[in-house]
Image (cartoon, rainbow, N blue to C red; front, side, top):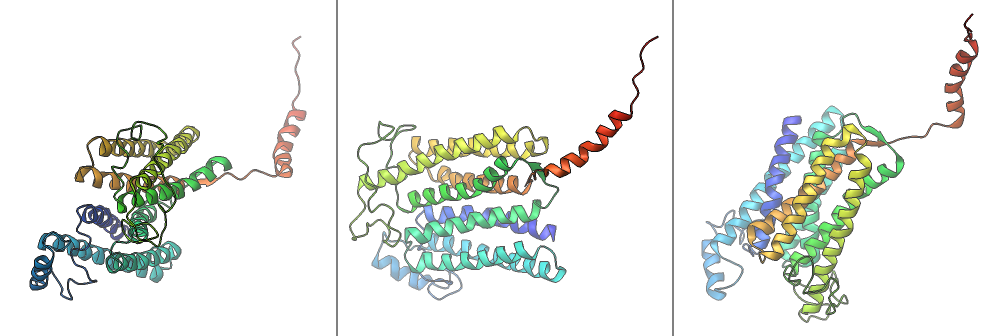
Length: 344
């Protein structure tokens, strides 16, 4: 089971960045149907349909290279689904860890549906963002299933609840990043750490920028998103990164006194630093494709580490006052029974 989970985790760590690469290289509609390519098993068998689509739209989203990118991603995702299905079946057969197995399998089914809707709904931002969240959650849950379950460290309730909140907050930040990417707002803010020469740009419009039912690149009324709306989307993602970084630093400071948590806290610090550097470099270098994919990998790593950190901690339960008194009573009796010897 451990080898199977490790192999599934390694494959998921390929599938999710590959999906980001497909989307960022504008190959998400390389095969505009699902699950095949123009109803065929591979782009090779759909060559005639691809040529017809290219003749109708020479600069459109369909080309042999884009079709192969999309289909390779689907092949690997389907293989990952089979591995997770096998792991879940083994867990149920052995009656071990049925809850994480069932939850992961349900998430994988939802992720497959989101992958289909991403294509059939023509890259609607809400679906693309949900698909991104699902992929990163699968990686984090696989890592937690494979490496979690060991002896947990008792931590104070305040730190424990902070560790519980961190994966959810990272997911929220990933959602903002997915919204930035799916709306092509990554370069709406020029410069870092300022945005268009200011920490609080005057030209920002939040109305209509986060309407989840709208189509790609359009506001709720069907008009293209304005630069002020794109700037608001990007600026909010930066604000979320700042707040999340402060909370992660607070968790690092509070958890460092627990020696058993230090290896994972060091991983958390490294993942945070890497992600911040990649985010800044994407702006400074005008969003090169390798760095954009790397930023997705950094988010995946950050989510995984926060979930692993949570799996290594448990809430410290305060002892009732009666129990503390019972524990102190033998010490009191021992102290009374001692004799004091004075020097002659």
